[in-house]
Image 1 (cartoon, rainbow, N blue to C red):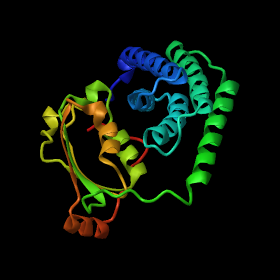
Image 2 (image 1 turned 120 degrees about the vertical axis):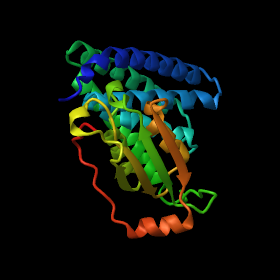
Image 3 (image 1 turned 90 degrees about the horizontal axis):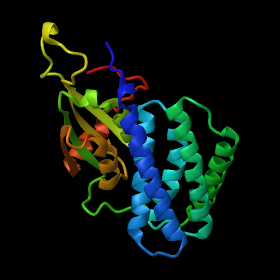
Image 4 (image 1 turned 90 degrees about the vertical axis):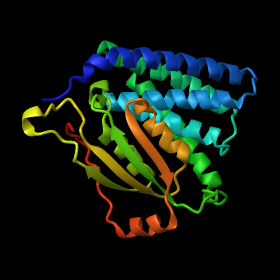
Length: 258
């Protein structure tokens, strides 16, 4: 038995179009000379939410396109890229394409794939130029506490799966940031006669090593805020030594009900 996540589509599209409108308004403000760093953070959060939701619900084209937008915006908010007119104009064009893609996904229609490909290529070209320019100057970030990773205790509430959230999707995102080790706890599993495949009875201890900021982790887990008990702590030196001797795991593309 699997969960029909299509029941959550309406909420996803409503929130996505609201986020897209906020994104476009903020981009217009920046284009008109408004100087407010929070606008870039707002635009990034909107793109991140749309990317995460579209990935959860299987709208792969939307997720892939928005991921490129998100990467460009991340460079801006981290101060790695100037907020230029060219970049803002390209992001406004990207917003138009994203609206077209979301409407097509909502209405089971088609979007202008040729335009989407062109705009995505332009985004990737802009990112490529940034990578070349910064390749010799970007220094590794200092965590400030000597840690080189994070210890995450993730205990979803039993109703988590019914909200359309998928822990494995989040683990895949974490694995893209660094080396991920996953330890699953099964002690809360009910006896077979009482097992409900739409309920989550597992919890996880995750060890993520690499140059990863707390903000990056918060962005991944924001989708389950209020639906789990979550603890995120920097790795100590001793914990990091243990992590280095523990084999990492591969997070598979297809998840199963917990």
